[in-house]
Structures are given as C-alpha cells and as structure tokens.
Image 1 (cartoon, rainbow, N blue to C red):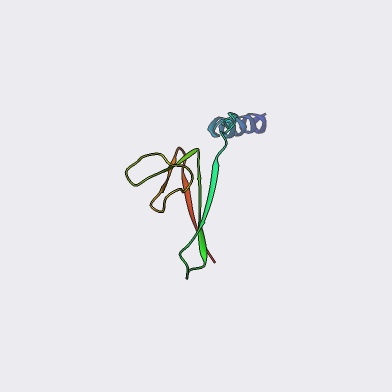
Image 2: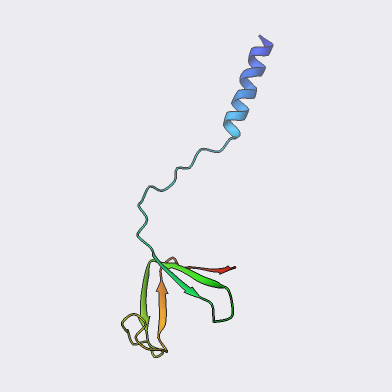
Length: 87
C-alpha cells in the first residue's frame, strides 16, 4: 500500500512539473523572394538574400525596373535574411 501511494505521488510530481506542449503555428508562410549576387571580381563567393518583398530603386528612392541603372539599389522588406557564402 505504501508503495502504491509513493508511486502515485512520484507520477503526479513528474506529470505536474512537466510543461505542456506548445503547438506550432499552422499558418502558411507567404512566398519569399530569393536573390543571389556574386562578390566582386577577385573574390570567390556570393551574397544570398531572401525577403517577403523587394523593389529596385535609384539612389534617391525612385522606383526602377530591375537593375536599369548602374546606381540602382535592391530594397528588401519583410522578414529579410542575408547570407554570405564564401568558397
């Protein structure tokens, strides 16, 4: 009888002290845009970037078509990740 009570107390303590499981979000992630650009001439490697949205802009912020001018800037927004891959 003492063993049964002791076993129940141990099980109750273990179950009571464990955290409840937290479910993951099942919301579908929005599609992300992926970009890859090489390093400058002499270096081996590349930049890999992902973002929710992207737009090419000029240095003064005016929207452009994809890389139309030499001074264009790729503006990334929303959940941006930049990786440097070195070979």
